[in-house]
Amino acid sequence: MKKKQDRRQKILCCAAQLFADKGYVEVSMRAIATKVGVTVADLYYYFPSKEKLIQDTLVSVFAEGLKPLMTLLESDKPIEQKFSDYIDVLVNALNTNDLFSRLFIRESCDKNAVRKNALMNKIFEGPYHKQVDLIQAFTQTAYPHLDMMLITSLLVGYHIMSNAFVPTVGLENLEPDPDKLLRSITSFVVGGLKAHALPD
Image 1 (cartoon, rainbow, N blue to C red):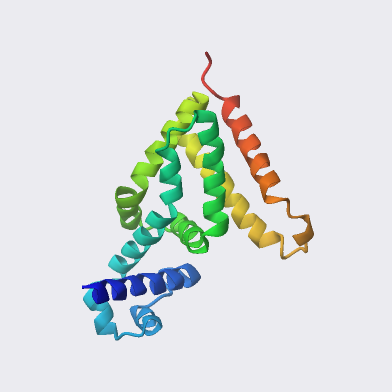
Image 2: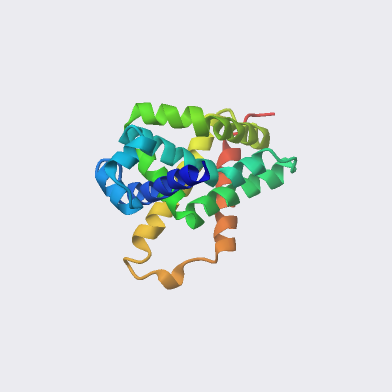
């Protein structure tokens, strides 16, 4: 049983790397089998289709990557501290978990509604609503769902643009200190959220 579980986990790890590097369309089951070191028939024994494989791969990567976020959201920390830590956790998830960030960005741009619904039901629904609850409690905003998406968009956008432009135009020496960057992002987000908070 353990050997079977280990083989399945190895398939998920190899598939995650390939899907992150090339995207779903460009990766074949044969390429995944080759990377794992098994036959295509063996691969289909564990996963009956490529769609099933990518869904299970994403569930595995995202579930692991979201653990720090869920731990924070379920904690009893004061709201102000929890919200500051919330931004910190999101920034770290994007900047330090390469597989998570690349697959998250790819899937965010993908138009496969079936896969998106499956991921929401299996992985994202709990974190989504807990984030909305935190934002509502922190700012009393009228639009917590929209604000959650705006925060995520801001952080993902910064992650993409900094990786795209800083090395290209020779700005490596201008990269801010991580702690200062986090404080700047947190201040920007808090200011923006409170600008349209519900009136007393």
